[in-house]
Length: 571
Image 1 (cartoon, rainbow, N blue to C red):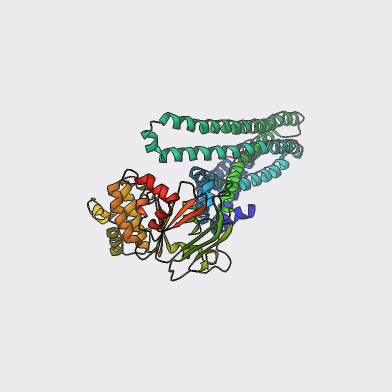
Image 2: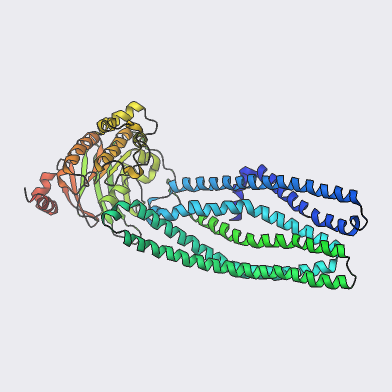
């Protein structure tokens, strides 16, 4: 883990070296004050050397000016290193998230992922900046103070440093409890963020059902868990800090008593004793810094471990030897395909399908029968457990995922649009398309005329998830996106089920245009939308139970006929 953390320093090596040199000089300059104090008290003041008092005082002031500039550099450029490392980690995490399979997002809430990308990475950047500086400055200060104090009185110095092992023992004993408490706090923060994200995105539903109180109750459960975890963490911190602070306070008492005895026995001069007391703070200060570093270290390490948990999650990978598919005709074949999500092992089993290029193939059946799962397996969103899926007689594991998905267009019931302009949302289908191609795609999707009524036209920003558009407008925008992509294979997963009849007719016209000349898989509950399909398959309990044209299935008088008659019994 340390090696992977240090790798993020590599691009900033030069700046980091200067930062460490500045930190080293700050530590060295700090030792000059007690040295000059010792000379002042033992020599210059008793011997009335006014000129030397001014020279040494001026020298100390110059050193402090230099230290001010060095501290500015450390604070500014040191934090810059931390922020750049944080940005690189965030980029690495974001890019890795793009490569993770659907299953990862099935199991992880958005809010928890966001916590790892924001809060955790901030803690890491703080450690990346302050950690090396604190360690270097504190270590050098402790060494220099030990050497200098030894020159004043070695025995008094050894007495002071004898307290250090007690501090180390206490720190090690309490560090584990702090680590566990901060890990629990991280998890609780993730749960709160997930709850907030869920509630805010669903605020319209909450208002519609007047369930604000219910949402508040759900939020308070996570909020109180966070309070409990934070209290536990603060308790661990309180025990840690109070115990270690007590040890450092004992240092001062020991210096006072032991130094007083040495001074009483004429074993140390008053000037040396005064300089020793001043110098002890040079030792206690770095010790306290190291104690504070323990808390920062726990925060940073915990955050980095959570960062690595995502980075070590296995991404989607093309199978060895997979090649891009070209000139796709659109033949699709399932042979004995079985699949289940997690503990569910029976979503699909031993499924056979044969879809010819250019035909419209409809999947109908009750909810949960496996229709959407079939649609998700064609673009290789999930790995099948048994069986094979072929595109133009090439097994999908032999095809690179990018090339496979570039040849498949998907229009779903739940359209996801981005909080950008109408143009950018259409361009998502093919980012290198021209303006004329965007407009042509919008026209074919029956959305262009509406766009032209807007004040900013194609530059209109549509809000989060397209909130400023109606359901039909969002659907037509997603259809325009697929028109621009122009794939040979099209999947329509309940594309019109949430629309009113008038809007459905308008969108069905766009879909009919979109389907022309493409292999199309249609998932629908409204059987009126699939009557003209070349083939209709009834899916029930993960199996194909009936298959044929609309007329053939009605003639069978089986499940399809029952579904059809139930929908049109009033007609």
